[in-house]
Image 1 (tube, one colour):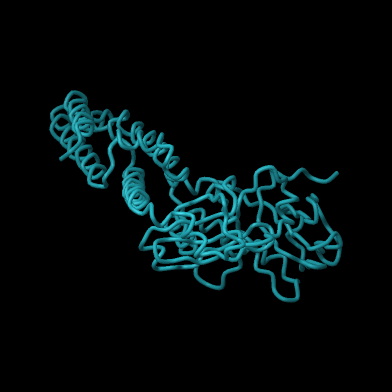
Image 2 (cartoon, one colour; image 1 turned 135 degrees about the vertical axis):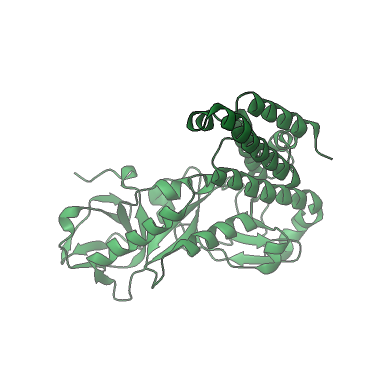
Length: 353
């Protein structure tokens, strides 16, 4: 049965369409055509959207309740809150949003509805004893932050799929956020024990984290099917960033033009990200107008045509901004004990004076 609030929203929208229709359609067509065609299009479009939203197992009341549910995973509660706001904006605008935005909302509604149902139906799998089984007894956490594994794995697959054909010059990583730690400290961070794990009803697997908080999610079919969670070893680390790193050859020397080509591969991914993909907004909009080379000690340097260059310095990392004046450069060398070279937003790194 369709919830009353969904029926009411549908009646409200259809009444608005019957009285007004689409203003753009009325301007583009004669009055009779606008009344007959524009209203019918609004009626069908609004009805299909509201019905599909309900079929996804969602309602506005349920979303608002989930967004305030203290017992729900913080990640799921946050998603419910944002989806409720987005759905209300669409209804207030008489379902005139672009088709792409409506599809994105329906996809999120289906994903969130299934995730909430799985969360509510698998309480036994979330007991501390289950975590102790998947991790060593000595490393079993007392506090954990949980994030939806399927959601983040699909993001990872989606972005990989957007890379242009040919050899990849970049790698995609998730990066954990560490409250109270500055950027230099995060770059030098090395996990002392387990840091990331994937857990579902039948799957329990540790995930390696490299220096700096970077990790990549493995494809675990059971955890995907069972809508498992990503566990982080601190309840304060609830957010993951998406970072791109440069593939540096073994000799740590490469043509300067290769950095431009790598940045072009990222730009190709950005061009394919939907403007309505809220979780990828930062990835789509970041200029990635610099690289940050992090070393294991203070002796590392970026050499451009044999000369050490650093537009900014952050701890043991050297920053090189995108500069058209360097377009004629031949080679770049990362001299020293290199850890990782990541693409950055130069606005957050003050230029060295």
